[in-house]
Image 1 (cartoon, one colour):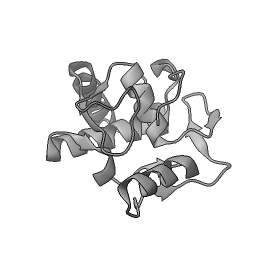
Image 2: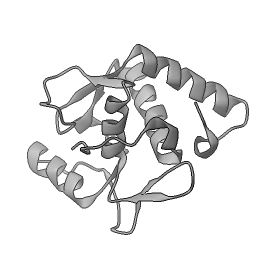
Image 3: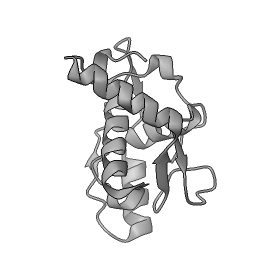
Image 4: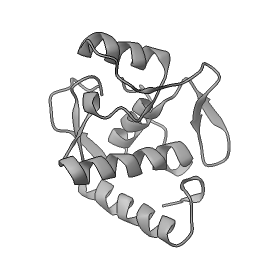
Length: 140
């Protein structure tokens, strides 16, 4: 469930950074992020359907309507781009990596971990938030 061309990190906005913060929280609690057991993700219809079909369960993801996408730093929106695509962008940027063989795509049963660079970025994001910043104005 990964986009072909990752969005560069310097363009990331609220949706990317909130997804990284969520991923870090799960990794701290469970040592890794397993796609099928972490439902608090914005999911476009295709990803929602794939998760439901592959896992034979209701993925409990947050379905997106067609007009929604991912908000970038400059306020523009990438249509048809959800939190799963944000994970793909993070893999492309070297912040996370799959620990299971997922054949180059993030999908059901994929397991992800923060890289050393991802841990540093998550720490910088936490410092930014604790100083009164928000996900939308974080710039690494």
